[in-house]
Image 1 (spheres, one colour):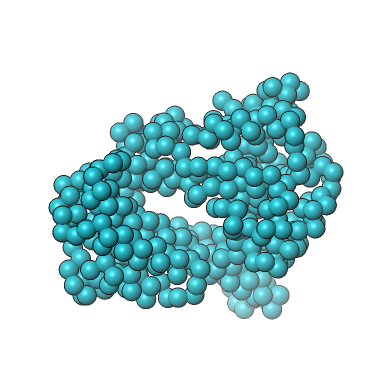
Image 2 (cartoon, helix red, strand yellow):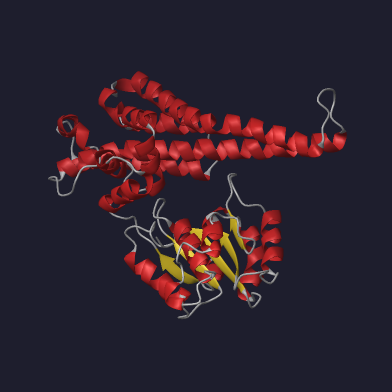
Length: 380
């Protein structure tokens, strides 16, 4: 097993990174781009492991077995920092801390590596903090930025980075990875990979969680019962509820554990009023948790709308003559009946309404329920 094994369906990227890790043209800044689920952060992690691999034989760099590879893949290596945010944006203070870290020489590895997994979640002034560090890096520092597309990063940054473009892997490759890595049944893996539209992370969740598969199927079937404004409003309410419950289920327990751990670290009294300094730190934690919860709901809603979009995508495929395989194969008969009641132009308009709702939810402060209600009324 090597560090490249999880990069399914990315042969050109693996070749590029493997050759660089073996000493062919390493540069100080890299930009990994690709649609959600393509594995851009996994590619950066694998590359970081290969660059710092303990193997003296350069042809074996990225062995996946040495201490350096294992600690980097486990995100515990002292010279490799992984930066991701569960809030809406990466703050300017966090960016300054990164620049400070990048200025230190590696303590034990060949390279000090900074992997920024959410480079698209930095405001312009935050990105500018990184600019000088990327323009004039210390000799043994490598920056790896990850974003959905080059356009999501300031031109002044991306012009100084070497591009690594990933694509969504074929569903068959995702299914093979689930079978090999997670021991998922072949049929379940294939269905999950297809339903996730090759998004590796979502496919894994669907393959391992029957309730997640049921929630997705419920979402995809919503248009079949969409009759009138009342049904549209109810559908919007249900979609927001599904997304919110899914997000909150993973946050509540985590929030409570974080607060308990913070109070224990601060040596807080078991009862009574907290001292002002402790109250300030607890409030900061609660504020961070609220921002994380907001992003969790937003991301969950976006995934829910992506599932809904797959219904209309399949309808359009049928209306255009079944040129490619359907995502929701198990609903073919219902999809065919639905497709017979409208034309491709109407389906495209409905898909456009869903995409507009996704954009509004992820890029503005609009109330999610209002955005979904507006979208649902356009689907009648």
